[in-house]
Image (cartoon, rainbow, N blue to C red; front, side, top):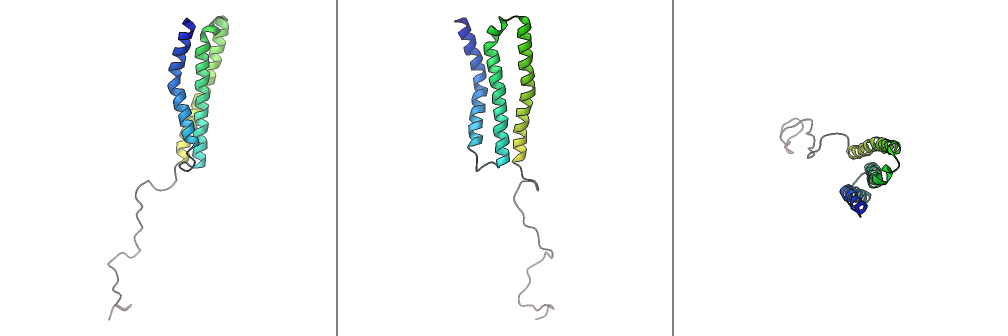
Length: 136
């Protein structure tokens, strides 16, 4: 029963992250009309990588008591392996999310209301009754 309590605590600690990543993936996949294709693909890829990292961490946390029974050397080797995988994949996932945010931007002027450019010769409207020379 003691192991079951440990299992529940570890799963409860990871549950918020898992929910955010899964819901974020579902929202990103359904945003076909709102996000550019490249941004959506990068977003889904980043969320998927972060989900894999979180699942690896969850499995490691849950199985730690049983892994420790294999001896200190085995525990150290597995811990290092999980640490290296996490250290490599987590930045990749975050980088993909940053790339997704950047891929959705348009290049050019800063956002704001569009202002039509002024005509070359700005001045009062011409009187249609005047001749080209300015006389009647």
